[in-house]
Length: 74
Image (cartoon, rainbow, N blue to C red; front, side):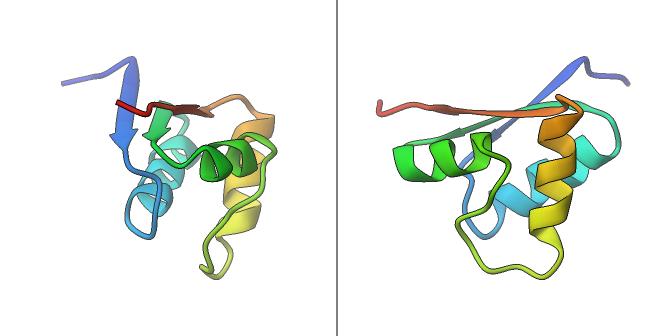
């Protein structure tokens, strides 16, 4: 089974590393979170949590356009 796009709901300590792992495998990932600060931080290629080596993975995936994040307050 193959997917063109993967959505990850919640970009905290579980969701963000999961989304980054998929994106690092060149899968198109859309991350969704209710925390606007988290979304803005990720879209700058930075992270809002403490996780070794995750910042470089997110930055690289954003640069290569495999990972985007969106705010959803609903």
